[in-house]
Length: 388
Image (cartoon, rainbow, N blue to C red; front, top):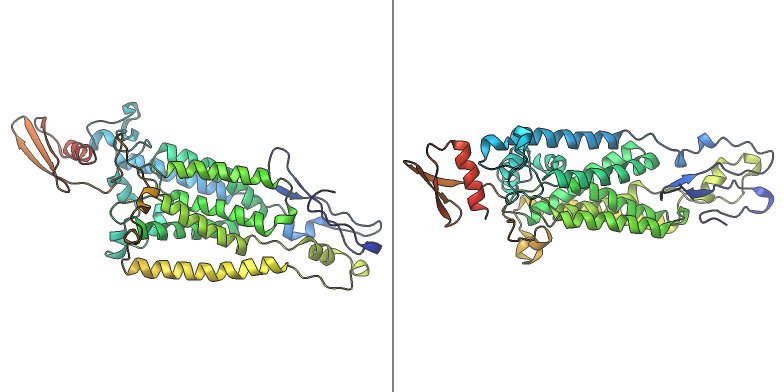
């Protein structure tokens, strides 16, 4: 007997709902109910297992790509930096690899576009940055990894649960990721576009747990989740990508999944849609006890978590003071790049054909043979010098 199938009771009082997995995937799909001869069944009435048309997730993908293109347009590396990668792309070319190994814009540009900057959120009341950073990416590699994962996971979830629940889950998870990020990343900006994605990953895991009995290929689903999570966590060790947003988004989505993605078990569904003459006299609860416990517990934990996070953020709490090594979870510095992504500034002194730059946030200085340097060239050289 296939997993998730309930045996027919005596006298055929219930309708069977069979579930199997799509070929080449791990998605569950309810099939036509099996009814005893003579019992009319309208499968389209079983709304709890209907298939939705996915349009919101593709819109999210398009929106993220458009925002990245606009960000690169604003960045305009040839005008604002001395050296660029892929100069044949014109103003869409990338910052030097030493500055941004993800093939993307500068920190200054990301800040202009709405990257998460805690000082601006707390001191200048720019709370909108908690949401705008959800749509930003550190570079091409970051964008491709996220959009591929979002397309694969998001479409499946939207088809199963509809655009309203998945859209709300995506946005709240992104906010949860931004909150945790703001509590750890105090001295540099961050983009948390993948926090919302990890919320979908977390909800997929909780949906698997809370609807455990209706899945067939449980192990295959877990392996798929682990691979995607590992890829995105590895990307989070690079500059401009925020692993704290990953963790916060994952936890938010995990608990939200117990609330939004709960399904009634098949005994209740079959009893509800069976004709009156064939219904069981014993009422069957819509949800199992463990489902209700997980749902209520998750709501309580979400309220406590978001409330505590907002209060700590507004009070200026820095969780790095409680955990001295946690910053390595978001970025690991190497000889090829620096983890300092905050905007930099320099003191410049032009003396004939020589330009001397001194970093305002360190003791670094250097002299260049560059007569009549423009402001954009000075800014580019300053960024390269002070981030080494």
